[in-house]
Length: 166
Image 1 (cartoon, helix red, strand yellow):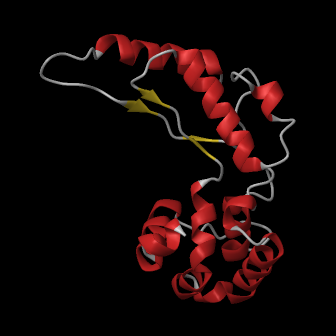
Image 2: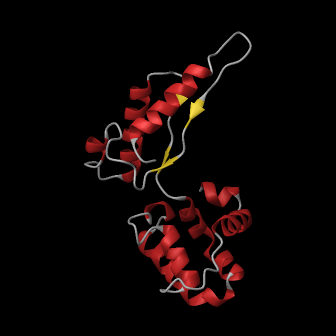
């Protein structure tokens, strides 16, 4: 997302095009990553003052819903990037990338230190995806063995929905 106005324009257009009728109704949602959300997002200035990340995201979603002004719209902002979920299955990463055991041990330490995979998402160089790439490829990132879509699918399948949800 480059700017909020881009998103608002797209959502408003979808809401306008897909009108409910006697035969069908529509519900719309989003899935935006909180990380790097543009600062022109509604309520952004208020949200950044909220210490609890879950309440911060909830505040942004509420501002978003208010700004869109359509009962069919249910905003969703994901606190963490997708790779945070892979921290629920670090052992599965080790199986896929056996040469990365030392790097995966660091991922385990990062998880213990944070206590929650969703709260690891904290910066451009320390976000879950960056940590996983470093664990698998090393500091120089020259091997390019990490395949984000394939790894994400394989690891989350092994982890299972119950663990992911908890």
